[in-house]
Amino acid sequence: MATYDYDVLFLGAGHGAFDGAPILANAGKKVAFVEREKVGGTCPNWGCNAKVILENAVSLQRELRASDGIVAGSGEIDWTKNMARKKEIISIFPNAIQSGMEGLGIDFIFGDGHFADAHTVTVGDRQVTAENIVIATGMHSHRLDIPGAEYMHDSKDFLSLDEAPQQMVIIGAGYIGLETAAMMNAAGTDVTVILRSDRALPEFNQEYSEALLASLTKQGITFVKNSETTAVEQTAAGFAVKTSTGIYDANYVLDATGRVVNAAGLGLEKLGIQFDDHGIEVNEYLQTAVSNIYVTGDAIKKSQPKLTPTATFESQYVAKMLTGQETAAIDYPAIATNVFTSPRLAQAGVTLDEAAAHPDQYDIVEKDIMDDWYRLVDYEKEGKLSLIYNKQHQLVGAIEISEHAEDIINGLLPAIEFGYTPAQLNRLVTIFPTIGYSAIGDLL
Image 1 (cartoon, rainbow, N blue to C red):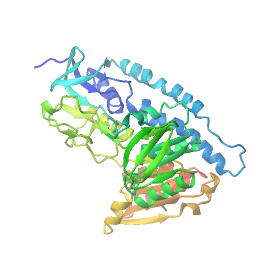
Image 2: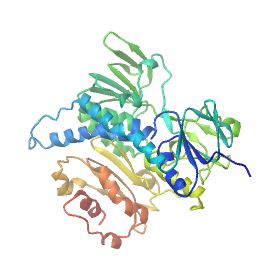
Image 3: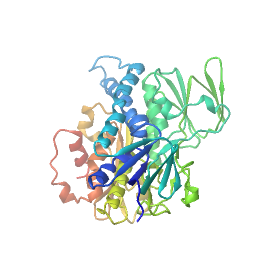
Image 4: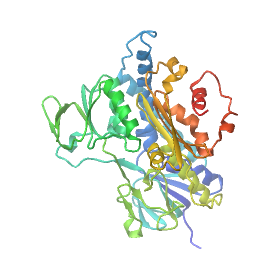
């Protein structure tokens, strides 16, 4: 029987790795991470945690200004102080995660790892062997290949931007593009968003995504649709972004055109493991074509949302597989997702588009949430909710746009995942008056 340095070796030390590693360590497995950048990966360091800290100031500003003078003040955001606060909080994560893992006996190997064979990873001049290897390398920002690309920044750059620019052009209208636009608009920046097509957020129903764009437009953000970005040129005042619809001036240009899997250079080709820019191919057990090599998190080619909680679920699933606690194929739960703009846009379960395409299976109930008096307590002025039921009148999906959409969808998630009936929902006596009470009330 072969002897290996480790039972399980993770390539990457983000949520796709460190959320499952304690299960392995507690089961007596010898575990290590290979990490080429910061412990914690994208989410804590350059993604969702960093973003939500910065966005918190926007939420405070939005509510203050919506109070129509009841709370005095302009709500002006000091972006430099906001960024300093973000950096202070974020700096805690890498050491905290590393020390927690090391306390469980888990090792860290720092460097750029690639496969020598199915059980061996080369890191610098060292070779590390493992019985099972989990690829948790995540993704990186896609970069447009156009003249002047060197003048553009990615989301990682933006999340360390110390001063708010006067003018900003954002290329792309996905999660990153819209969330950045909302933050910088609130910080006083003149923001223009360039869309290659006629719609934003393809993961969401177009009526809802258009409602979000309409709200952001009212706040002062300019959206340019069906526009191909062709070049960026440096000027005396900053930069000129050249597109098929015109030229747009900026002091800062963000390339938010998507993300690409971190798979090139791993040596997957020689192992017969298939991948493309969208991810690495796996089976229903998250195994690659090589049975002892698994993939978790954003590195997987999948239809499920590429989010931190998804990576956590997958990491823990693989850990349970490798400790014998799980033998069945992965069964994904309903996964909630949210766009951190003001207002929010959130959904979970069966999508509105899927329900509309299958009226024989689903019923759609539209809710005018502004009829709910409690929405006025938080100074809400716009919002909409669509509920999707199966023919047994069990909630199977929901989508909402509002200032508290993420809280509403989180509140509805148990009903979506576990198929609560109206009778079961009537058993939920929530705290009144709260937004959670309103969420359950919308179902009854």
